[in-house]
Image (cartoon, rainbow, N blue to C red; front, side, top):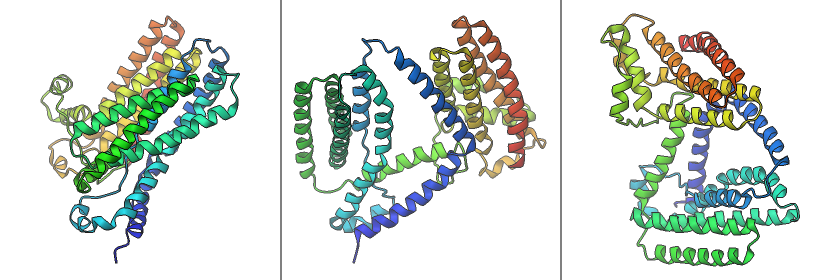
Length: 405
């Protein structure tokens, strides 16, 4: 007899085993060091900033928007796979325990973001509203947990609807109501918070009514949603290790490709062309590179201490080169590259050259930020330190790493 609960336990155990294998590579010693430094520095300057918090600081808007976004983003993880479209549809009327377990798993695994946000915003809340008791903030966090469960259930109900436009409208309405509820709660407007909560309850009941009118479960939609989420995880993990399950997404970006692939038509530039076009079109290399530049630039602009600015600049240079070096393994499974009529060592030299170029661009951007802030010592230090760091790290660590692989 088919046991849906036992089936979920087996599927869940396999999922945990697979993801934990890649998480070990993601949270390696290098990333752990960078995260420890990052969190320590942010915590220190956060505490310093709270001591001079302006009276008109929009605390309610910031906390309300964050909590509203966190409860609104409540995807239902079902752990379904493509073969289930054939083998499980016949047992649809017995799958109730499986989907209940899946919703519980989805809820629990998403709580860490709420707990992190709650811990991070606690000092800001008490600094902005010192007259309020501590249990008021705890009550807000409890309401966040309740709304998180409500949004997750509503999302599950709406997954029975095949029209994407209908699901988007429902999600947009719930998002606006979630933002309003938590803004009014933090601001202390309990009446308006109650009104928006009632409106959310009406939308919640409407979703229930609509889902009951649907003939069955949209299996293909559930499989597609879970496959897309796993592909996102695989793309992140692929920055640190080879992921055979990854289905690479290639983006055109013709105008950018035409710029970066202007290399001489010679054998020794074969991998120059390949790595450049892979950086622009494959995976998430370009997006990761831009995000690290933007985040590092924000720290340089807003961190008050010039030497901490310099440390953050070097930290984000380190993170960028560490992420981009995985380009070396991007085409590892393509055997045709071994047939290229190019000398030995050209592949490694081409990657080293590209990394130097990317890190030089990032160093110059950080240096221009220091110049824009009129911090001339910092500008000179980040230019000299960045160039020295890039040379030493790429020549000593990266070159040795890819040579041993």
